[in-house]
Each structure stands twice: as C-alpha cells, then as structure tokens.
Image (cartoon, rainbow, N blue to C red; front, side, top):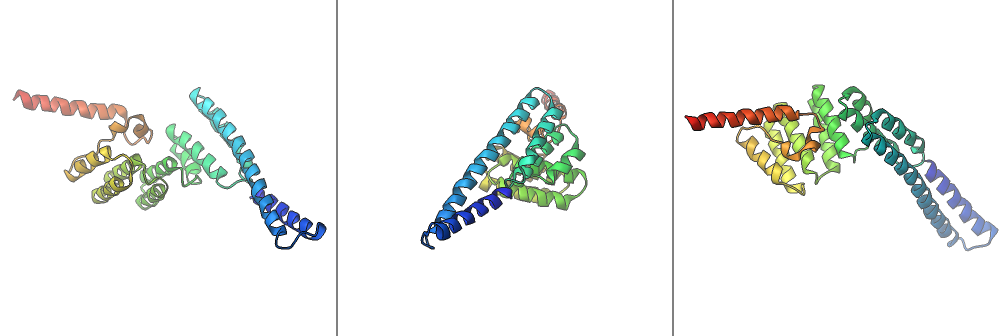
Length: 241
C-alpha cells in the first residue's frame, strides 16, 4: 500500500535526520520516527476514508433516486484510492456486486462479489446463493462459512444458509446451522421457529424478515402469499367438514 510506503519512508528519514543531523540519541531517534509513522498513517487513512465515504454517499443518493447504473459508475471512482489503503477495493466490489444482485444480474454480481470484502457478510451470502444456483454446493458451503466467520451474530445469515442447505437436500446440515445460530446470533426467535419446522419435516418460513429476506431472491413475495392463502383455504375446508 502506498500509504505504508510513504509512512515508512518518512519514519526512516526522520529517524536518520534526528540521529545523524541533529545528534539525537540513537535510542530516541527511532522512537520519533515511529511517532511520525503513526501520525502520518492516521492522517492518510482519515483522508482516504473520507474521500471514499463521500463517493459512497453520492452513490447512495443515486440508488435512492433509482439511478443504479449511475451509482455503480460513481462507486467505481473509489477504486483510485485502493492502492492507498487496505480493503478499499474489496468493499467497493462488494457494494457493486450487491447492486447487481438486487437487479437479478447474477452474472455481473458474481464478477464483483467473488472479489469482495469477506467481512461484508450480505455480499458473501449472495455469492454463496449464486454458487448454489450454479450447482456448486461445495463452493456454496465454503462461502457461507466464510460469511459466518465475519457475521457470527447475524441471525438472518444463519437462516439464509440453512434455507439453501435445505433447498439442496441437506436438511440435517441445515438443522446444524440453525442450532449453531441459536448459540451465536443476537436474535433467535425466527431461527428457533424454523429449527422446529425443519425438525418436524416442514419448510422454513423466512417472510418474518420482510424485504431484507426477499433481497436474496430465494423466494418471491407473491409466491409466499399464494402458499399462505392455499394453506388458509385448506384449513377452512377441514373446518367445514
């Protein structure tokens, strides 16, 4: 990273200048050099992250206005700061990939999400779903596991993981993931209900998460409502009898 190189160069230059130019004790000069390194790095980090934040805020306004392509173009401007700080490129890739995923452009989303930031758990979960769609279950599991390592307390993540496992016929593994989520997640009500459903041989119900669930495109709101309507109608017929 350029910021580290600049900081290191200034640190060494400061240390040498104080020791050989100003006659400062050889034990004190390196400490001063380290102080310069820390201060300059902090200032560079603050400058770069401020610029990246401004770009992302501008992109967010574009998204809210419905101009997704413009938002993506705006986000790409942040790539110029990638050589200056760690993880900037990965975070931007995750954001762009998420936008494409929400638009159901899964091919474009994959290209960005696979280069995304591992701590962006939602993006990682979307990447895992794409692997499932591509019939690559092992890749799906590996990606979900990486997502959980970054989002241990996110109950929705465990739910999405379990839902996908159940969808590919691995119900026992799905139950294990929900049990793990009950121990780690901050909210457990929906996880508990879905665990009981799977144990009873029933399907998971994720609609309680609302729009944040439907953004993964694993179910359509209309399809869920139709299933619920059929279930209600079925119960009414039983009552009439």
